[in-house]
Amino acid sequence: CGNSDTGGGDGGGDGKIVLGFSQVGAESGWRTANTTSIKDAAVEAGIELKFDDAQQKQENQIKAIRNFIQQKVDVIAFSPVVESGWDTVLKEAKDAGIPVILTDRAVDSADKTLYKTFLGSDFVKEGRLAGEWLVEQTKTAAGPVNIVELQGTTGSAPANDRKEGFAAAIAANPNLKIVASQSGDFKRADGKQVMEQFLKANPDIDVLFAHNDDMGLGALEAITAAGKVPGKDITIITIDAVKDGMQALADGKFNFIAECSPLLGPQLMELVKKVEAGEEVPARIETEETTFTQEQAREALPNRKY
Ligand code: GYE
Image (cartoon, protein in one colour):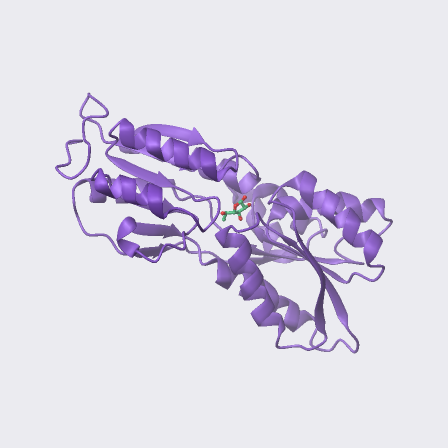
């Protein structure tokens, strides 16, 4: 194996399939778990992995993909940091005959032949589930419910889609109002800093919706420092359900998490083998996920792998 008649095929030299993977970075607990899943699954599947960490910069990802093309890897996979601006480099991969798999995040390219498949979550649905829970909790609220939103990386699919899904869901209750919304880049430090600003500018925050656990965890520090009790004075809803997030939920500091699974490695390796062999694969493969209340987090935590 390893000698695809469509791909480069001679990158490895020892007959193994060679996969070039460009990762977003190491911005969150989710990302760390995702990287581990991909590295472990490659070893398990006997696939040679060339791994690049782009440090959340699109230019680094484009550079990494061009390097993979030059090295004639068999398959390229990547998690695009933002949605736009990929057509040129994807076209280069296609012209070189190297199949591309999108994992975790989508691109907005109109030409769907630029990649073979997209493996990842439905981010709009995650935002919607978060919003629907809030609508349910606040259906008897007499007055306005003031929400602040910590968005993920500007221009990224999960930030765009979670915002959209949440906004659509909370429209069901006119009492629910987003009073401030800003990016915390999916990082703890940024989540803390932006939450400090939110707290200064808005004396009556009822709810925080953070696009990931890490920003919510950073915000906890700002909320406590402001003399408020997280999970009580301010209801906190996040997305991901990584271990630290689940712990905060079990401890009553968070109130609800919509899960986003980072364990994409095994499915990715299956897809790599298939596209390398020239087999057809579905255009979209959606990750299965659930939601957690505080009670459910307490039950799930002992068996949580990441
Ligand atoms: O939710 C966040 C990470 O793309 C789904 O990226 C991923 C998101 C995840 O930094 O924690």
